[in-house]
Length: 434
Image 1: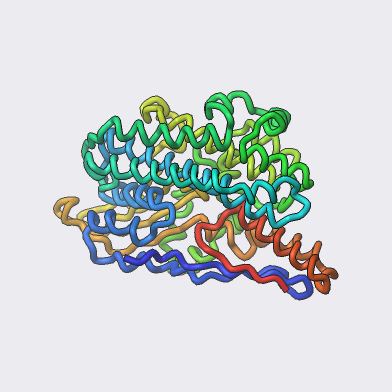
Image 2: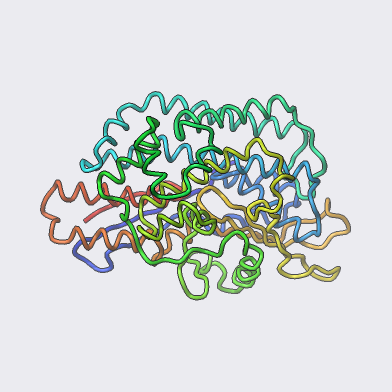
């Protein structure tokens, strides 16, 4: 089954209006191919059809279907979902920190040290490959004890040694390549901006080098713009109640393509999540807004938190909002009409929301999907008036008048790619600068 990710095309103009134009080839209504299929079949096929952040897709799907059908997973299935979601986020953040950010910074001559970091990539690539294998191993092991993503999943019993081995590799990668110490220890000892800078100066990991490169090049505020985040995880249920009628409206396709909340474009990223938690990222945002250094710190903080909690039982952290079952029944189902569920999951790049309409059936096993919609982080963050567009508009304004210089044009493109990498699209993109 083909992955329907699509592509973004971002155009940056230094001498024309609008300065930024973002278009998308993403098939935003493709989930409708699931209509007419049994709920269990949809739960199995959807992560294959939309494989970017496949675990988050599976969690959001399961939660939406469970809300629609009035089901609840067994505690062990819920624990497996949360464990794999944490691992997926950790794996994605490792990829950004070890591969994508060094490559983007290396394009800038001003980012001293980043060029060397990008050139010395073999060790990081090997570490990332090991982390990928560990994640795939974890996913396979968790699947051998039963399908945790089946709506209303029963108890699962994966092999504990396989789970522990995969956890250990992910934790070791974070320790050796990112923090230079235990992830929980880093989180506890890095609550302020000063602590972050002390850590970066004293640590020899590639991630610490990124912090030094960003600050040394004067890029801490880079990309700063005025875009509010979506409500925090603690308010997720209320947010879903707000989104449910918008996803059911006659203009729902237009909303999914360019979503707004209370009339405003919003941001949903690791930065938005960490800002709500306070601490390090909130302190950096106070000084640098939603600039580059706070975004980098958010990846570090969230990676540390997820890595530290990979070895913890879900029951030990059930009071934390991101572990809540944030699925709601948008319209109470009856025997005479369809059942509607809206479910969400905190994907690595932002909040992922699914809405499903299920035909009423005598039993959950015989229920069929009537309609399916997905609202992904990409559409929030790459909204025509969103955080990427506004940041790029400032970059275009700074580059106006320098268009004739080849070096200036190349620098402008490098800055634009750095901003896009920092916000992080869920899909591939093309960038043109003129």
